[in-house]
Image 1: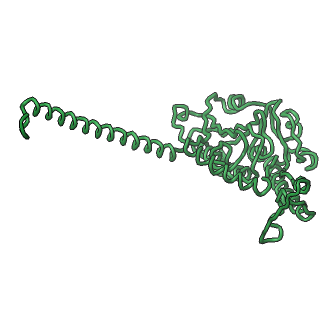
Image 2: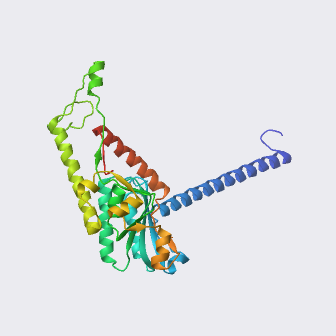
Image 3: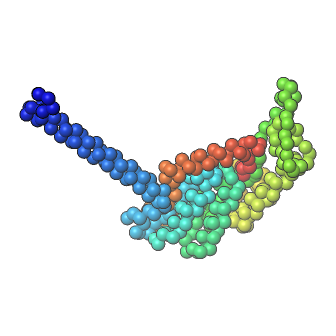
Length: 318
């Protein structure tokens, strides 16, 4: 090489370097496009899942079948749980609206939970029964159908249980803790500032007042009365015994519940489908939240739970 002039071999080598550089740049751009397309496909798939609803279009739904909706676990407003009113109502509506459904079966395995969620599902079952008188609704107690779960079951045309099922527990509970004596022992002073005379009546670090206790008991009695009325309206004269005998919070086996009129008979979903509707075809219409819904529900539920705990407790019909 002399001065600024490249020799032929040097020029060829430089050209090879530039070409290699250009190829590397093109390869890098292709990978960027590829990964961007993957991200777009991923986001699109997640979006579809978010808006996907119950739509069990299978060969089984094209023939006469019994629709099954599961009520499993604690009844809660949390959307990441199957036993929320929103999810249960979605499943029930899909079951009733299916053309070839001959009956709707609510399969229950729940200890109860939120009185509000339970009441919403109860009213929706009542509404759907009125709109679809040709599609009976049966409730089935598996291991347990207690409290709020039994509240919901009482809206059905009939209730069935296994002999060893646990049924009943018609009562209301509100629980919390009191730490005022411990604070006095360790010498900690509680300072609470409120606007509203009774705003801190559930504060676990303060002494209970007779007025607060009376108010809480009034709340629980009112919810209990609504619960009893729902069961009485749903079961009618099949229920045997006084309110004090039946609706005192006790729980019974399936056999005992049958004697008391809390259930109509002994049997499972499949057994009743065969004996009354002459079919073995069961189609699950239970609403299944997608992963994003479960995550969002968990975050909101934990936040709401923290607020409730900060207030001193929550209410369950158990």
